[in-house]
Image (cartoon, rainbow, N blue to C red; front, side):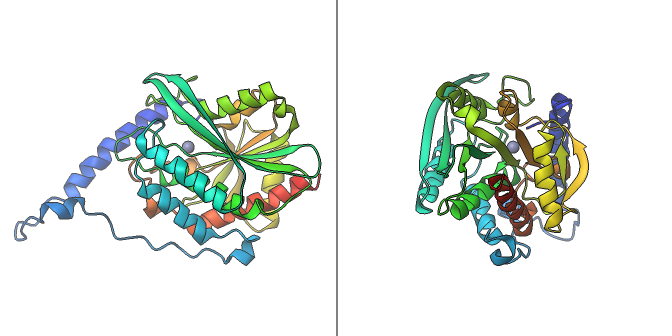
Length: 331
Ligand SMILES: [Zn+2]
């Protein structure tokens, strides 16, 4: 995703940051003390020690949502490595997502398609979990699962975190039946192929799904679309996304306040372009839950790795989603 008003500038900053950080890395691994021998080459590239997740509240305190389990699901995605659209690695992730969702008892539909991009025609695949309801109407949840095409970019927060949250929500919800159906979308191709965010080179998967829903007639059944993206950072601070449907944002923010999470769901706003735009453009009430500003230090850099992921943050966001869905189910 990108700031809608300055995608190019932000991408430029990210690149600048990358070059600064790579220089910092050279300095750190050098031999500033002449008395000490140079470390063996491997020590320069050795992986950092595994991070211990910070304390997630027990699942019974977050309506069953298991933050530790979500943390492990982020780590699993990161273990595949970079996962850009069309790569052999994203195919491994797609297989993992499908088998994981089926192990929860979820019904999963896959939509394989291809998109013309600045890098040529790229094969993509959306996944859609469908949980039936008692009345007509659908509450749609969503995340993207591709990572941006950048060297050494493993996307723990963007978009490992929201993908893990949606998996854990699916584990909670696939066994239940509510008043309305709940569908959970896993979008391919959210990230721009080019470094900068410039329409139509982005949101390939969500545009595909929204167009499919328009053709099938499902679009008018969607009562609300709740999108998550970049929600697992230790520095969790989520602003209201200003292009989102504000009545829907109010449901999420009032739920977060009721649960005591106002320090994480703050009453500031900023605009972000993301997969919800594909549905907003088709008049579906949509809200994006995204902590983009809080992620500015590592967004679209190799520093978006497990060291910045928090099981507690994942649990808080999962809890807010579960309780917001209950609110939407009661209307
Ligand atoms: Zn993203």
